[in-house]
Structures are given as C-alpha cells and as structure tokens.
Length: 427
Image (cartoon, rainbow, N blue to C red; front, top):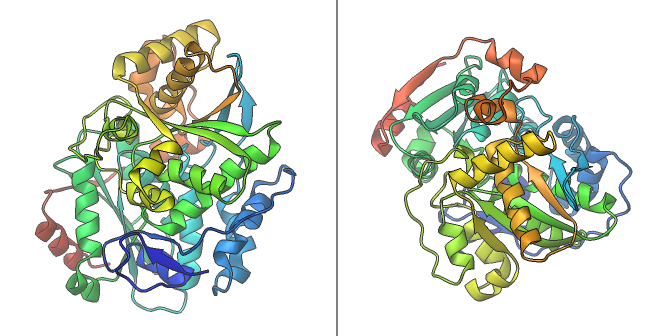
C-alpha cells in the first residue's frame, strides 16, 4: 500500500514514511493511493483483533506490518462499548475509557507504538508537535510520557480549555512540554504546520505531528467504528461530534472500506464552517469561535482536505454526509434535560451529538442511531456540574493525573518565536 498527498505534488511513500513525516512535503495530508476493501466477520468482542483485521491492508508491504498485532494490543487495551440509551433508538459509543478519558487515547497510543518501533535505532530524538483544543494534547502526552528518544510539544489556546484539561496538559514528565498560546486553536495548528514545513528547522530539530493530520492517529480511529458496526443488528447510522474532522473522516473511511456503517452526520458546535459547506455554500474557513464544547472550536478543519479527496468534488462530498450546528444554549439544555429525565450525563461534545440525534427524531427519522461519546463529563466539571446539580464522579486514571504538578509555558502565536523555542530546547 502506498500513500499520496491530498495536494498531489509529492511522491507516493510507504506507510512508515507517511507516519514518520506527519505532513507531506507539499503541505498536504497523506491518504491511501487506493482504498482497500475489508470483509469483516461478526464481532468477537475483541477490539484489538478487529483493529488488526481492518488495518492489515493499510500496512501491507510495510516494515511495520509484522508489528501490527503488538501495536494494536498496546493501543486498544481498554474498551469502547456501544450501549443502548434510555432514549428511543439511540446508542452511545463510549470512547472515553482510556487513560485521559477521551477518544484521542486510542490514536495517540497507536501512533506512539508505531513511532517507537520506527525510531528504535535512531540516536537523535524526534520531537512530536501537537496542537490541541483540549483532549488531543493530553492523550498524546500520556502516550509518549517517558518514551525514550521521543519529545512532545503540546500547544493549546490560552484560556480556551477547561481547567482540568489545562492541568492534564502540563502534568507529564520532562520529555513532554506544554505551551499556552496567545491565540486560538487555529493559531496553534498554524504554528505546527509551519514548523513541519520548515526544512531548515527540520534539519536542526527532527519533527513529526500527532494531530489527526497524522495517519498514525487517524487510521486506528477507524477500528472502533468498525468494531461497533460489526456487532450492530443493522447498518450503524452514526452521529460524530467533530471539530477538526479527524474522527468523522475515520468513520467515513471505515464505511468506504466496507464496514456496515450507514448515514453519517457531523455534529458541530457554533463554528459553522462544515454546516455551511454541507448546506451548499462554498467551503470558507474562518477564525474559530469559543464555545463550551471547546475541543470542537475549529474554524479551519485540517481533515477537510481528506474529506474532499475521498469523494473527488464538493458536490459528491455533500452527497455522503451532512453537518449540523448546535449552539451553547442547546448544548446546555441537552445536558440538563437528560440528567434530570433519564440520568444520562454527557460532556458538552457528546451532548452536541445527542442534540443532533433529537433533531433527526423530530424530523421523522425513526431509525437507530449511534452517537460517538468523545470524552468523559468529569473533564468539564465547571460546565457539567452546575447544569446537572451534582458532582460528576472522576475516573481513577483522570484523578491520578490531576494529582500531579502541572507546568505550562506561555508562547506567542508567532512562527519565528516558536521555531527559536524549538531550537533552544535542550534535554
């Protein structure tokens, strides 16, 4: 299997090269040269086994192919249950049972397992850059914490993540450093892309990415959608809360390779880049708007390039998905109402997906739908607890992380300043 850039101006590469690079030389994102087809058996309940079966074609001919079972065992060491809600026809795909209580744990651990094997004979450390609007950075920090030969730089928008998220981001060891950027998530993402595309900087400081622009993050995210779909009674219609489009593209890729996934709806917050596009308007990236579903505060979703590449044109892309925008008032109402009526407690991002499901019901859609639950509500206690009127129990792994000392440094939203900081990091 070879991988090409979404922008078409870079030579095809193998999977290991694509994962190590993060971003293609022409600034595009790596995608499979051709999508394989996978014949999935009924689920056996073993998520790591499903992941191996789904991902084998993507690893074909690559040096990492023989390592795939071990990589999947390390990455999928916790469950992703699909359970029925006390809401007619609704299921929840719980993706928050990992060490940082967010779905990003699966992809981050998978990427770390891949890079550790690719870099085991390399003396110079590899610096992983990750822009985060909340959950990605903690997952990547946890996955690479203490890993020899690896360093991580987490960039997050100052004052735009929850207090517990911010504490997580700064709570790791000496090889993981957190920078609070004076700007938005899009500014953080811009700094990462500029650094990855700076050949002079790369010569001084070998760099890669752990955002969903990395294939090593996105490919494993297909597995939990495929695993859930293979155990469902019928094709799994899915609502995916999304900001940067990584999880949503993973769901569509899983459907594209043959998994029994039906319609896919993207649940967005008040950032309307995607809803406007799917409503028929031209794609128009813009500055992100801060919301209470902060991990989805993205105005320029990187993975839109992969979405457009998959279907070939804007018109065809619109035929294969749709996007709905949910504002803060609706998110709050959804969390409060369900906690009071049926005892279900959702994080703001998951509540966005639940609201979109409710709209489908009100429009007359009586089919079963599965909503991806992206994070545990305890990560957003300042928003959730006042709405539900009681404390949210904190998972043990999250509690342990919050008990650590957190260290964070300020960073200007300036590419030269960031490049100088990277060159000056001595460990």
